[in-house]
Length: 304
Ligand SMILES: Nc1ncnc2c1ncn2[C@@H]1O[C@H](COP(=O)(O)OP(=O)(O)OP(=O)(O)O)[C@@H](O)[C@H]1O
Image 1 (cartoon, rainbow, N blue to C red):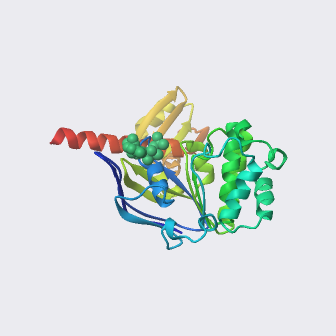
Image 2 (image 1 turned 90 degrees about the vertical axis):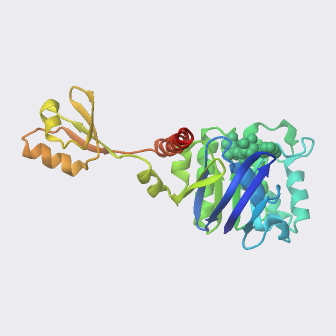
Image 3 (image 1 turned 135 degrees about the vertical axis):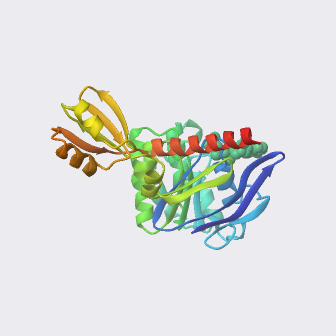
C-alpha cells in the first residue's frame, strides 16, 4: 500500500504538487494520470525518496522510503530507464543492485528471464535499444520481488509486442496481490490495464476512482440510432435530449437510454435498424475532465 498525505512540493515559485492525499491499494493496477506538468513525476519521486517533500508525507507499507531497510525488497520502481552505467552489462547491473539489497544471486537470472533479456544479459547496457533499457529497468524493479511497484511511463520506447507484455505483467502483479502504480499518457493502453485511477491537474487531486466510474462520470453516454425514418423520429425525442445526425439514416443521441429511444420509436411507428449504446473511451473522458478544469480556471480568472 502506498499512502500520500498532504504531499506538497515547491520549486521556488512553482507549486509542482499541491496538498495531495491518496492511497494506492494492493491487488489492483492504479493508473496515475494528468496533463503534462501536472506533477506526476514529482509525486513519484517523493514516494521513492528521490525528492524531499516541502510538506506532507508519503509512505510505502507504512514507512517512508528512506526508512526501508532493503528498499528494493519494499518497492520496485521504473523512473528513468537511462539510469544505467552504459559500460556495464545488464547482468552486472542487476548483480550490483542485488548485492546492495541482500537479494540472492539467483534472482538476477530469474528477473532477466522475466523481462526476456536473458540472451543479451552479457551485453553492455550502452548498446541497448530504448525498449531493451526499459525492460532492464523493469527487471531491476522486479529483482527484490517487492509487494509494491511504481512505473513512470513504462510504455515509452516499447513496440506493440512490448506494450502487450507490460499490460500482462502489470495485470499479473496485481493478481498476485501486489500494489501497482503506473503513469502513462497512452490512454487506450491505460484503459486496458488499470482498475483504478488517480488523476491530478496542476499538482492537485482531481479524481480518485475506479476506471468504470471515472469514464461514466466524465463522459456523456451516446446511443447510435439507425433508421430509414430519421426525420420522423427526431421530433418524437424529448427536448432535453441531444440529437446529432451523422447521415440521413443515422442519429447520435445523448441524454436518453437506448430503451427509452426504442420505446419512443415503437410508439411512433418508426422502424429501427440499429440501436446501440456507444462505448465511451477513457481518452474522451480524460479530455472532458481536463477541459472542464481549464474552463473552470478561465471562468474564475475572468470573474475576479
Ligand atoms: N527540478 C525541478 N525544478 C523546477 N521545477 C520543476 C522541477 N521538476 C519539476 N518541476 C516543475 O514542476 C511541475 C510538475 O512537473 P512534473 O514533471 O512532476 O509533471 P508531470 O506530470 O510528470 O509531467 P509530464 O507528463 O510532462 O511528465 C512542472 O511545472 C515542472 O516544470
